[in-house]
Image (cartoon, helix red, strand yellow):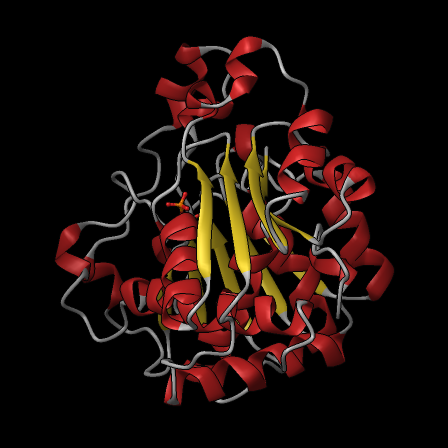
Length: 302
Ligand code: CP
């Protein structure tokens, strides 16, 4: 992992995922260390973020490193017309590692090809969000005690949801059964279903939420992403199609945990928050430990 960019979740092997999770568990037990002292991490966010940016920054701060960057491209020279390539080449002079979120699919790969320091993809359009995926794996392993042979219901925007795309690819190493629950307009793209077919992994597609979560170990809820729709009317048609409510959780498995990459809009009723099966805020906390592990591995410090 040392000095390698993380652009897509399949840049890492199964063994490398497990190593990240092992190191994340170490950091969870002992999160305040000076292991990043003297290192500078740049966070370049061309799209809004709360959890990804702040958990990276929190991780760097707890580990004694320094952060530079921008939270809005309009406050950078991109506003004056500077290209992504020139921005990356410049920021490489100021940092040891670049964390970048960008609305264009493929932007992180492009950045990794021109950069002299490792790039971490913090989300590129509807494509990939690999560090979210690693914190999701960490959350699943912590709550289930294993990653193997789990039934995972993915719910909501499976078309544009980069987190479900990354998670599907990573979990394919662990013999899962997937239930894809989405409106027809937001179905899991064929390329991901073909990927599962090629690996012999079981999946079914459903429209109804309440009926299809009873045998699940994990429900992975997602937000319908208004920013990915070209036509606002198409968004209005599907935005509230699934709302998970507390009473729907009756009869579900004891070990069930509900994950959501967040932010949520309406798709999980707040009456679920007090249920012991709701895990999404702990999941967000796990992001700090997973990102500590990713950065220190990439910098060859672990
Ligand atoms: N999960 C996630 O990517 O959240 P943010 O958009 O707040 O970073």
